[in-house]
Image 1: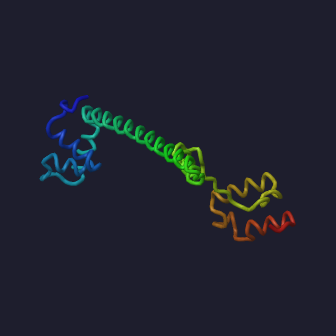
Image 2: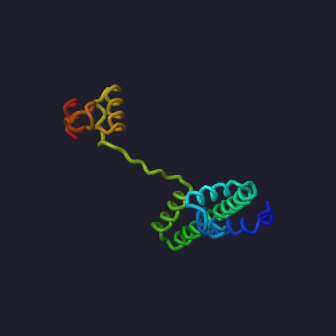
Image 3: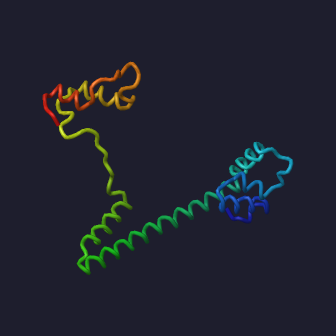
Length: 165
């Protein structure tokens, strides 16, 4: 949909909305709101965002912005590749590896994993104990009557397995 399908006030509203990202403020600047309450302005600004001509125009703007973001990511990846190659040519392998890792992070090849417990801490637990442990974590262990305060996880593991970690 062309921008010409919008009225002058609608065009002004869209311009201000795209610039500031606030429909209420855009509505206040584009329309006469002297006799309107703040609630009425909010309602009208939301209604205007759903207006078929405005919604269609904004969806086209969003598609263009997404296309530009993809190109920006590709350009960034190419720049990191160039930096990696330059570092390799100069024998700066740490810098080359860092550039390659950053490229991988951009493509989400690396996922940060956070583990709880020390090595072997859960080896002595039965399936039921493991399930109870997991459910206790989700509910907030040690809170409420279902999980009264007691020995720590590692203390329970030591008692069950007889091993000290």
